[in-house]
Image 1 (cartoon, rainbow, N blue to C red):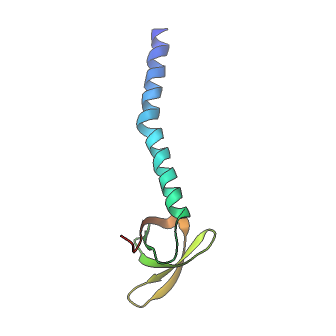
Image 2 (tube, one colour):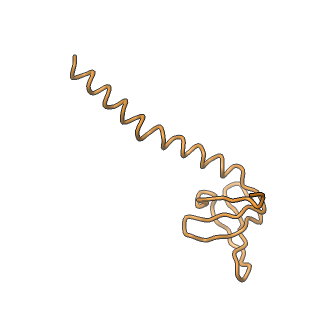
Image 3 (cartoon, rainbow, N blue to C red):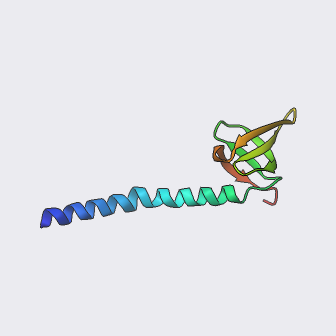
Length: 86
């Protein structure tokens, strides 16, 4: 009985330490992607920095300096967002 209690406490601790923070981070990231709009500056997972021109269902069009290239990347590749308001 004591061994079962030890296992339950260990699994509960692992849940609190690993799974719960990851779920919170995932929800925060999903909310960030839902709030993307034209004019936001973003950085992709590949390191591309650009300004959002248009937002589609699962893609984002970016204007990338210095030549003002227009790139289409998936929303899932967006890592960070900063608005011009800040």
